[in-house]
Length: 71
Image (cartoon, rainbow, N blue to C red; front, side):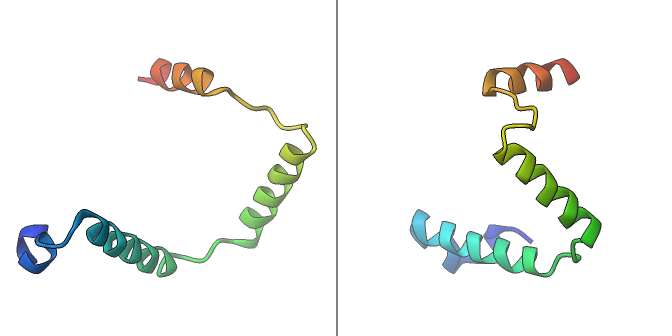
């Protein structure tokens, strides 16, 4: 299925198409699998460590270099 299948959507303004895309994305995400409690705990702990300044971080430049090295 492509945008060509929906000529009315093609005629909408860019902001209107983006709004619809966001609504479609939100509906797809809400249909996703539930997050296990262990994952929620891990994320909560990592956020707390970050907020305390105890988590390792990267600058954007460091992140880009790391990604490029993996290619």
